Amino acid sequence: MAKETLDILSERLTPNRLRAHLSLPGDWQPFPAAENREAWSALPEAQRRELVGQGEAWHDYDWAPIRATTFLDFRRSGNRSRFEDMHFTRRHALHHLVLAECAEGQGRFLDAVINGIWAICEESFWGIPPHSFAPLHPHAGLPEVTYPVVDLFAAETGALLAWTRSLLGARIDADPHTAIVTDRIEHEIRARLINPYRNVPWWPWLRCGNRPDNNWNPWIHSNLIACILLIETDPEVRLELLSRCVAGMDVFLNGYGTDGGCDEGTAYWQRAGASLFEALEWLRLASDGELAVWDLPLIREIGLFLPRMHVSGDWYVNYADGMARVHVDADLAWRFGLRTGDAALSAHGAYAASRNVALGRVDE
Image (cartoon, rainbow, N blue to C red; front, side, top):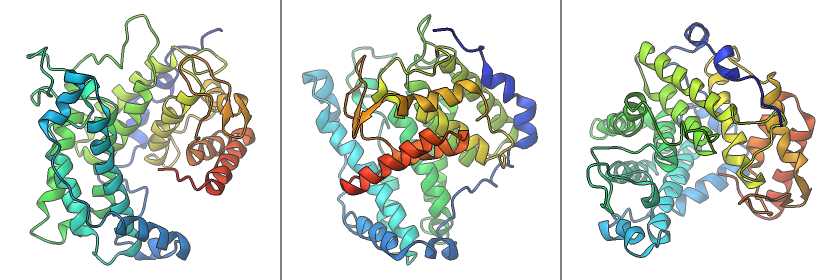
């Protein structure tokens, strides 16, 4: 399959255009903060009750530390599930507690949110053991905290904390005893993500030799861009970082054929094409639409790949190591189609949403 013109994002999203159209640092608030009660009170009552109920289920969650020996499981026995169960449960809990506080707005969940933030900030590594490496101690089974690794789940964790600060930062800061928590979030995101991304010239997921980049590239960039837009206050540093993100996503796109097909399998679309959409959507939102690139043919083809691979129900054409049954992130698919103006993709997102509701599945 023929390749699309190289570096299509860098040609469109130049540093001069980023400088001209991006919102000022600190001004970007794409979702209403918790103190905007008018916005949160506009939620349908059933949805509000659901969000509060989900938070209540995690209100008394025990933020027990993850032991070093649990991290070592992967090196010692190959087991990764014990660590990952604890790792992802913590983030799942914080996610629900944040939304519950936003929906209710009474402060009932704030201490639990702060416990979650602090516990996650205390972790030595925000990623998972298979993604950890220690250059100074190559045989180590524990993370080297002086060499932060930017992996999929470190980036996801940073974005979770950045959005938490965006939504609840003013409420946390209102108590002088806890105002330090939002500073801690900023410090950790800078130390673990922004500075390593800026200062390390080469990450394996950014340039894989002669091989096209895989889903790690847009998956990480979508979360990094959110962190940069929400955390970085220096306009020149922010411009430098976002320009690098744009160039980095071009590395990913340069490996695509003009048909937009995902070589990793249909199941990976949600962490490849859909993550690319999410990254580009943050730039669109941060520029009042001036940096939209939905008219680029390759972007549209990447979106349409999903409905083209659909067979029936949850079944999709599978190849590579992609599963045949896929639980589609309906919201991302619907919004992707809405932005590109592709009715087939937005309709597929709506179809997936109806199935998720009917089967009791929730997108997160």
